[in-house]
Length: 66
Image 1: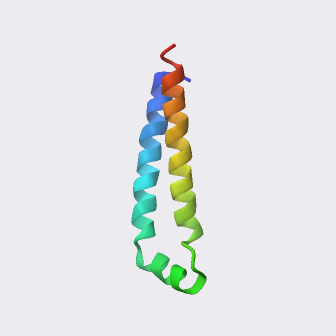
Image 2: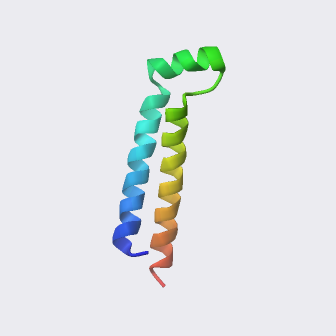
């Protein structure tokens, strides 16, 4: 991976994590947690996608330094 792609993945991952955090604290997510005990699928996908993209970007950035 090139540095540009790695940096884009890191930035995209951080943005997804931000929106996942905002979604986690939303009213609709609170209602979902009351009835199901779990956050909405949207929240889970945003947070999981953010983690995966950030880790992939960090790995790509670390491997491009060699």
